[in-house]
Length: 167
Image 1 (cartoon, rainbow, N blue to C red):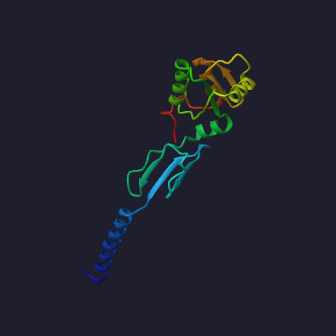
Image 2: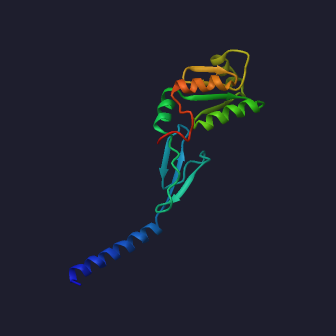
Image 3: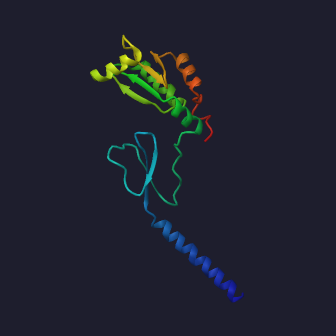
């Protein structure tokens, strides 16, 4: 073996060992989604208001990609979804949430607990209050009716299934 090849081999071994050592001592990476739906990465823990958090070390298995697909991001930008519920709303509100989750649609949930929240509801939907209610962009619907909600979501460009969405 020539001296040049020996040095190349030795350099490769040293480089591999240094890389392995760096991976073993890599810092923790924190990943969280903020209140605006943006994904954040940092070597510092997230603010205390963040409840769900992914933590990993470099070189480990990659965290599952929870970034919404392009189609969902486009629909979210043009037709954000908000659902209005009350504490007493059980079965229909659960059906509404399940529909949105099954389709992989991010949504904001508003509980009608204060006078201000009820007033804001009335400005959007009128009276009497009926929950669940949904706004999709400027469209709104009072009550839960699967067919009506599905059509509104389809018209807004949301995918029919979370599993069928290409990334």
